[in-house]
Image (cartoon, rainbow over all chains, first blue to last red; front, top):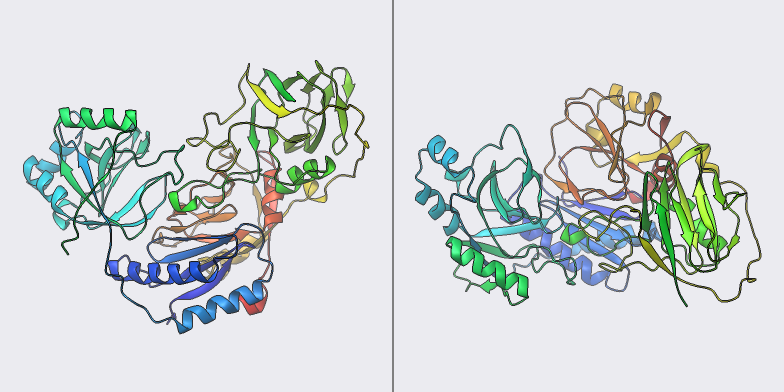
Length: 243
Length: 290
């Protein structure tokens, strides 16, 4: 039986801390708690701590000077920490246009699942999604919380080109393509909001643990928001925490 | 003094690389940086500058470059038969360049990637605190004809000591050092032995993101829950493909991570051309830290 969290080295510059091998909001909360205390502890060193569903990766800019003491320090920190729950989180509201021109695979999901388009849109835009982490492409959010009714297998033939902003469903996940890319998810809409802006620092406003909620907009509103994004006037709408 | 290098011919694939992006992995931004860190660092050290100063990474077939101002240069890494006008140049040696001189490359003798370092470094656009070219991050990801690359010119022509050193050992090595990866323990004893005893050849499907080997390793490993990967992480796909992730790799992945190449291992692999063979030498971490 493995004992979690487990620390192991990953190359000369990084430590990996592994947690229970499952995807859940509870595991994420634990991962983010340890992330915070490790960041605080190593604040004076040039390190970056990132998380995925159930791992933390602590990367040093240069080779770790004293791997032994760094390991002992991390080990002690993890063993003695008392997990505290975090009560607050930010909720971003993200506009999605589910019109036919964007929702290329809505009809297919609708007939395969025996759900009306309206029902799919209602389900997709009424859930609260938690951001687990950013990966795969710059600015791509790994989201949890897609309603069971909308789980749908990836396309057999991935599209060679999926538009920037495309909102898709792949198995148990939903997400937004931050840039034009090949992709195998079923596309149900498009969001005009900027997910990754290379000339901003930070380039993405989102952090693991934040929540997002989608809301449907018309084609005209989509166009209007796109213009705001282009002119730099766009600001994300935040929702009140109702949970 | 503002100065430029003009690209007369781009060659096969060249890019500007400094120490890479640090601190943006959390946004899904690849690290980037020179494929062969040792060779690029040597090029900078010979010019007595910081090891992470921006250099040009040149792959297999070099470009043709015109220097519009005087400077000093060093070439390290792969032997790609460099010439300054008619003069044949040697690797690992400081040369002075006059305004108007043209640097070109010829036949590849050995290695895959050469590094061109210039006094004070290239001064191309900084994006997310790095000059490294990276697809989707910087405006350009490869050298193109007609580009003018800025650098900080030097006034005096005679500051060179014309220092030089011998060749780096790792260029001719076929041994790629690797630590066990996070999922190494899931391999069977036979699979572990095959990894260490077989020769693997670098596949055509190789670039700055990853190097795929021709040989496959049949296995029954399950995909993992998407988890962190870094340059040097070696993934094993369900169909048996072995992929060593390199400097421009994604930040997360879902294939089992069977090995983690050492920094030296990454440098050795970075210099191999498609078809060349390597062997993996498994090394261990100090017992106390794992």
